[in-house]
Length: 293
Image (cartoon, rainbow, N blue to C red):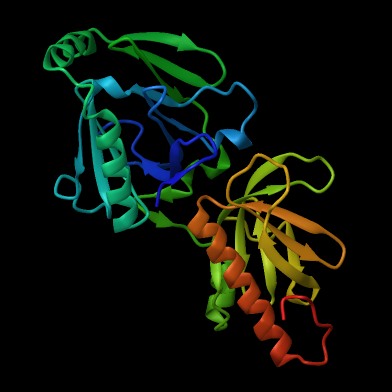
């Protein structure tokens, strides 16, 4: 479900077809700012990007003509909806039915009172005379109806995280599944570094051996495996960092700060890790106990 950040903006991750009719959906962070009259999306949560990073695409809410369920137009894409703006359809894939309904309602409610017909006709004419301009920093920019639409030229390792709504499974995860060791939970989160306190997106896998994280969901070897034996406590973050959906994995020698994509995902990770650690403690009562009990 989309959620409100600390500035009252509606945000969350979606899969977006950046190039119209390409059929290729990329994971992006959508941000609806009703006060600023803008709908924009980024390569990642702006909090995880360098200061001043421009959005991949920015749409003025006054240009949005309609937002609707698009599963009939794209029957192979689950939970697909579309935004009609500047005579173009922006197709997006939500995470589930509730997520799709939440985004459709939020965008329609934010834009429904700012779409006069004469403005739509004017924008259509400007759309026909789209001007392409070069843009530095790995983007191609197009001026469409007075709006700058930026498309990345070079894509990072995580750009193909989700295509056609399917999340890839890492080879190491497949090996464990073949042995009957199915993961308890998997997914992308953002983690703070141990030495350099920067934030990087990692693919996390929780199973009955520990909590592992990888550079991407296609990597064979994890960057690190946190043993269940070492996990003492998992809880939501209550400190001063201005980050949403942040939780702590407290171990015997370090506290890991991890940011989930939504409040629901944060609580899901906390519960999954806590339950898995508690189960491990019960099965191995001679092992050191932590405060998860």
